Structures are given as C-alpha cells and as structure tokens.
Image (cartoon, rainbow, N blue to C red; front, side, top):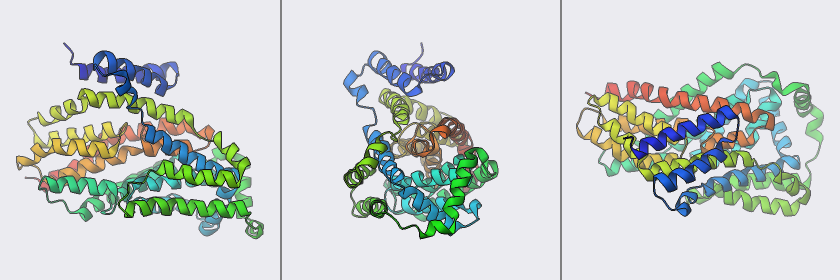
Length: 424
C-alpha cells in the first residue's frame, strides 16, 4: 500500500502536470488540491489547511508591486533608470553585474528580502536597454542568495547558528565565501546563456532608451512628487535595514504598504493607477503551491524524504540526496524553514565521521538557496511580478526550468567540490 506522504507527493506532480497541459491556473488548481489532500488524506482541519496560505508572501508581493507601481505611474522609476543609464553609459553589459552587487549588498544588511526592492528597478531597466529580463532576474536572484549568507544576514545566521548548536565548527566567513563563489558561477553561466542582446523590447523601448540617454533629459527638473517618491524609495531600504540591525524582523510588505499609503495621499492619481499593477496572478500561483507544500510538510513528506536520504549506505550519496531534497522543497517553500528542518536531519551523516560537518552544512544551505529563483518561491515570484506583462509567461517557464536544473546540479557540484575533498 502506498504511504499517504508518497501519494500526496505523486498527486502534487499530477496536479501540476494536468494544470500545465490543460493551460489552467496552476495556483488555483494547487489550492483546491491542497484542501482535498489536507482534509481527506492528512486529516487536517480545513481551517488549518487554509491557514497555510502564505499571507505574508501575498502582502510582500502586493506591497512591493503597489509601492513601485506608484513610482512607475508618476515617472520616478523612469527618472531613476535614466540616472543609472547615464552612469553606465554604453556599457550595457555591466548592468546585470551591477544589480548583482547592489542586491547582494542590500541583502547582506540583515534581511535578505530587502534586496528584492531592486527587482522593480532592474526588470524595467533591462527591457529598456535590450538586456534579456531573464538574465537580469537571475542576476538579482544570485545577488540575493550571495548576500543572504553574509554573517550579518538571515540565512548565514540560521545556518552557522544551527551548526554551532550541533557542535559543528562552521566558519561564517567560509559559508559566505561558498555562497558568493557559487552564485558568481551561476551568474557567469547565465550571462553566457542569456547575455546576448534582447531585441524583443522593440523600437518603442529603444526610442525610450535613447530619449533617456539624451542630454536634454538631464535638464528636465524633477517634479515634487518624484522627489518625494525617490526619498520614499531610499526610506524603504533604510527602514528595512534599520529594523534588521535593531534586531526586529522587518516585514517588507507591510513597510512597503506604509510608504505606498503616504505616496498615494501625495499623488492620488498615481495611487489609483498602481492598484492595477499588483500582480495578483503571481500571488495566486505562489499561494496555491505553498499551501500544498505546507500540507506535505504537515504530513511528514519532507521528513520522509530526509529519512530516505539517511538510509543510503554510501555517505556521499546520502549527502547528495539530502542536498537535493533541500533544494527541491526550498524551490516551493521557505528557505529559512527548510534550513531549520533539514540541518538536524543531516547531523547523523556527520556523526559517523565519514563526512566533514562544515562542508555538508555549507552545501546543504547553499543548495537550498540557489533555487530561490523558482517562480514559486519569494525571489522568483517578485522577479516575475516586476517584469512587463508580456515577459511574465516566459520568465515563469524559464525560471522554473532553471531552478529545477539547479535542484539537480547544485548538490552534485557542491558535494563534489566541498564534501568529497573535505571528508575521509
């Protein structure tokens, strides 16, 4: 007889496949399936299943896209983009690297999600300059993952804090170095793959870019609303980073809504126009899948996968499998939650002495983060929501395949490069 956890996993794959084949909204199908599986197979109260819908993620996506929707509607985003273009000049190829560094720097300041405020600037800028929005999205995603493992940021603190509690000597700077090196390799691969000029933006976008680069654009004074909006953009980042440094877990979505409410009062027409820019489709997509994954976690499906990894007799194979499980689940769920859940499952592999603890924890942590560009995770969803409407379908598909490739390749490469040489 098939275990309920395994049956629920198979149903997850089946629902996704049927929804994709029939071209219906995956999030809606997943939410309905989550309710059915949760109530009838897991025996959970319906209220508990529905409670797994990621309200915080919905607030994040709605808040950030609404805030920057106002900034786009009143022309502030275009002014910022023009300023960036003047600094970059004709060196368009530097844009992805610049946004990698900018996102990494902001993410390293306590709350990784703060780095996502670069997406609503980077995606329109990429389209305006003919850079493939997929490359820009991956640059922002890799910057997020790299900065998040700084000793001062959330993923780094969770990873080495959990390791130290288990008496595993993991140097936080080593973990940070592994994350930065891995994400730079991924960015380099993305640049080679998608770095060619993207002419899909069309003549209109090229004309807009030329206008933005023209010397006359420099002489046009900023409107008062644009100055206030630019100050609010800076204030958003400062508020998030300040909360993190003060030891307060910042809610990026709530803070974005607070600043957006002020801007809507300052510029009511832009506030009304920005409501239509909230990407509710992405909210439903991610919400439905995360709700189903929450049911899987409540049923013990993640623990089942972790136990299967531990049961392998070859330690290195176990390391690969548990890193693969971390990446796979993290592509559809909270990376922080996965780190807290899977690091303890990896401890028996370290206790035997065959595997180096610092190497395994580093590999597991980074494998669980590099897949966050999945459109069903916070980073990927924000990238998709920040893109032009006509780019979103392509981004969703490509980011899904890219993240699934990282689910498989990440564990193989990191275990081979880190765990194997460091273990006896």
